[in-house]
Picture 1 (cartoon, rainbow, N blue to C red):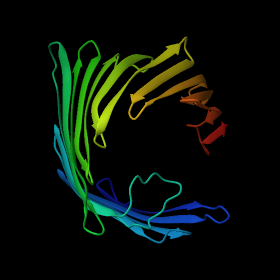
Picture 2 (picture 1 turned 30 degrees about the horizontal axis):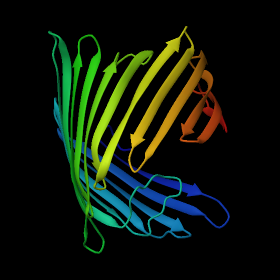
Picture 3 (picture 1 turned 135 degrees about the horizontal axis):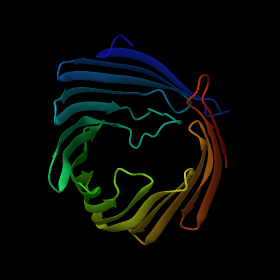
Picture 4 (picture 1 turned 45 degrees about the vertical axis):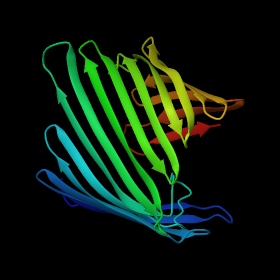
Length: 272
């Protein structure tokens, strides 16, 4: 790290497993002067089935109510990170993000946010891959209601995606008393798509947190997922809890313990 407006880091991520060793080396840098910034990352994968690189670079503009970025990215066909989430490989292209937000000191409405996310990529053989864009708008009321609209459309190769999502959240800034509903409709991969579900987060007493979310989907059949998370805070530094995930007929459970925030090493235990 050089200073508050610029820096560079080197990192290594390694997964050791017999017959499936994987290493990713990364170099990351950022620079900012005034409203303008520049960042880039370069990653090299090593190990069985790996050997390819991935890199990205971006120019950013940040003002009082506006943030914008233009990014170029490249991911080789044989880039492999077994400890990370890389949704697609074998592509390159550009993406952008523009975000405008504001707040009002008086009146029923408290603030708003609008964003636009265009993407255009092609595979490394030159065939168009992603040609899509997303648009979102959020507005919050003084009594902590949040109304969200998301639109996303475009093509992945020759398949068409176009969806609308409507979401309402009550007590949006209070995680101890928050609940909401969402509904999505449109098409995915040129087929009809609908999804909906509730979510809520409550604290009982002074220490027990209870968080639930549900996702019900109609797409080439019906599927559902339910996630229940519980956490008991012993003190600001220690807690224990667990999570239950029901994915159609499959069930996964784990228990957890956390000891963090004090001097020394943070400590986590997950059993499941």
